[in-house]
Length: 77
Image 1: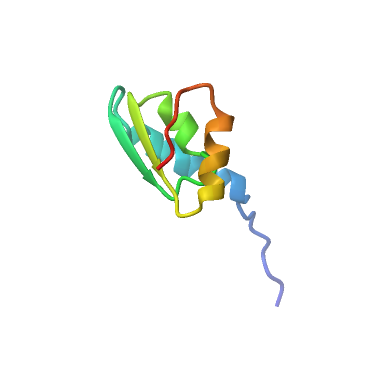
Image 2 (image 1 turned 90 degrees about the horizontal axis):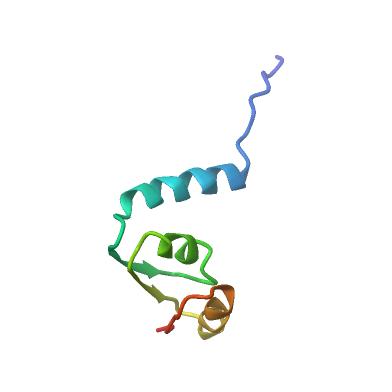
Protein backbone atom coordinates (compact mmCIF):
# COMPACT_ATOMS: atom_id res chain seq x y z
CA UNK A 1 0.00 0.00 0.00
CA UNK A 2 1.39 3.37 -0.99
CA UNK A 3 0.76 6.22 1.44
CA UNK A 4 -0.14 9.62 0.16
CA UNK A 5 2.19 12.33 1.39
CA UNK A 6 0.36 15.15 3.07
CA UNK A 7 2.14 18.31 4.09
CA UNK A 8 2.60 18.64 7.82
CA UNK A 9 2.40 22.22 9.06
CA UNK A 10 5.55 23.48 10.69
CA UNK A 11 5.38 24.20 14.40
CA UNK A 12 6.13 27.84 13.64
CA UNK A 13 3.13 28.00 11.26
CA UNK A 14 0.82 26.58 13.91
CA UNK A 15 2.20 28.94 16.55
CA UNK A 16 1.76 31.90 14.22
CA UNK A 17 -1.87 30.99 13.55
CA UNK A 18 -2.51 30.57 17.27
CA UNK A 19 -0.88 33.89 18.06
CA UNK A 20 -2.92 35.71 15.41
CA UNK A 21 -6.14 34.23 16.81
CA UNK A 22 -5.22 35.27 20.36
CA UNK A 23 -4.22 38.74 19.13
CA UNK A 24 -7.64 39.17 17.51
CA UNK A 25 -9.27 38.48 20.88
CA UNK A 26 -7.32 41.20 22.72
CA UNK A 27 -9.19 44.51 22.47
CA UNK A 28 -7.07 47.61 21.90
CA UNK A 29 -6.42 49.37 25.21
CA UNK A 30 -7.40 46.37 27.34
CA UNK A 31 -5.70 44.80 30.35
CA UNK A 32 -4.15 41.39 29.81
CA UNK A 33 -2.96 38.65 32.17
CA UNK A 34 -0.57 36.11 30.68
CA UNK A 35 0.07 33.04 32.81
CA UNK A 36 3.23 31.14 31.85
CA UNK A 37 4.74 34.17 30.12
CA UNK A 38 8.26 32.76 29.89
CA UNK A 39 10.51 35.20 28.06
CA UNK A 40 7.56 37.05 26.54
CA UNK A 41 7.16 35.53 23.07
CA UNK A 42 3.43 36.33 23.27
CA UNK A 43 3.57 39.00 25.98
CA UNK A 44 5.58 41.54 24.06
CA UNK A 45 3.60 41.51 20.78
CA UNK A 46 0.29 41.49 22.68
CA UNK A 47 1.46 44.49 24.70
CA UNK A 48 1.31 46.49 21.46
CA UNK A 49 -2.51 46.24 21.65
CA UNK A 50 -3.14 46.11 25.39
CA UNK A 51 -2.79 49.14 27.65
CA UNK A 52 -1.56 47.00 30.55
CA UNK A 53 -0.03 43.53 30.58
CA UNK A 54 0.66 41.44 33.68
CA UNK A 55 3.07 38.58 32.97
CA UNK A 56 3.21 35.66 35.40
CA UNK A 57 5.63 32.76 35.30
CA UNK A 58 6.73 30.11 37.77
CA UNK A 59 10.39 30.54 36.82
CA UNK A 60 12.17 33.57 38.30
CA UNK A 61 14.86 33.14 35.63
CA UNK A 62 12.32 33.58 32.82
CA UNK A 63 10.91 36.69 34.45
CA UNK A 64 14.40 38.18 34.79
CA UNK A 65 14.87 37.81 31.02
CA UNK A 66 11.47 39.25 30.07
CA UNK A 67 12.21 42.95 30.78
CA UNK A 68 15.41 42.77 28.72
CA UNK A 69 13.34 41.84 25.64
CA UNK A 70 11.34 45.05 25.50
CA UNK A 71 11.66 48.80 25.80
CA UNK A 72 8.37 49.07 27.72
CA UNK A 73 8.43 49.32 31.47
CA UNK A 74 7.73 45.91 33.00
CA UNK A 75 7.41 44.72 36.56
CA UNK A 76 7.68 40.91 36.62
CA UNK A 77 5.53 39.14 39.21
